[in-house]
Structure formats: structure tokens, C-alpha cells
Image 1: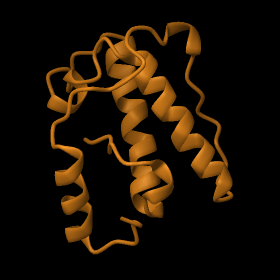
Image 2 (image 1 turned 90 degrees about the vertical axis):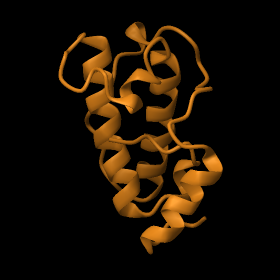
Image 3 (image 1 turned 30 degrees about the vertical axis):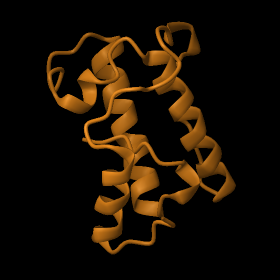
Image 4 (image 1 turned 180 degrees about the horizontal axis):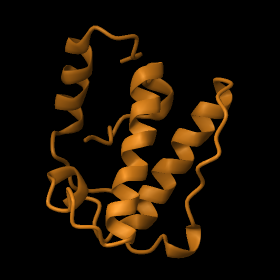
Amino acid sequence: MRIWDIPADKLCRNHLLGEHRELHAIWSIITKEKSGYAHHPEVVRWKGKSKALYLKHEEIVDEMIKRGYNHYSHIDIKIATGKDKQDKYVDSVEDQIVILKNKGCDCKI
């Protein structure tokens, strides 16, 4: 489970679409107070920052649409509260870049 702290336009197809799925999972866990994965570090760092998560979702969706993908899984801005910026990281942005480079995918980093 991971939300990259890298601009969505830099992600390859697999990472962009995978991040979108993961974001919806995290959104559901946080906003519906689900217990499964609630203590996962990636989920924990987004608690209290559903507004930031909503904005990340919109960034991902904008990139998906630019690439010609359909999007039907909207999230409700009315429940997007808390901080609007993410300031906690599981891995630093620099480490995330290294991780993506080592995957050998088509990410533009």
C-alpha cells in the first residue's frame, strides 16, 4: 500500500493506476473508520489529512484523463477535512525516487 509523493505526471501507467486504487482503499479505511489496514504506516500518515488525500486524488484523476483513461470513482469533497498538505512520509521523496528507479518501469523520474 503506497501513495507516492511524486507528481502524478511522472508515474508510469501501472503506478498511476495502482496509486489510484490504493488511494481509494486508504480513503475508505479513514472515512469509514474501517479496522483492516488502519494501522498500516501509509494509512496512518493520511489520518487527519483527508483534504490532502482528496487533492492527491484530483491530481491523479486529472492525469488519468490526460492519458485518455475513464474515471468513475469520485470521492466526496464534503468529507475531505483536516490538513490540505501531506508533511509525513514513510520514505522520503528522494528515497521514493530511488525505489521507482530500481523498479525498471516507465516512470519519468
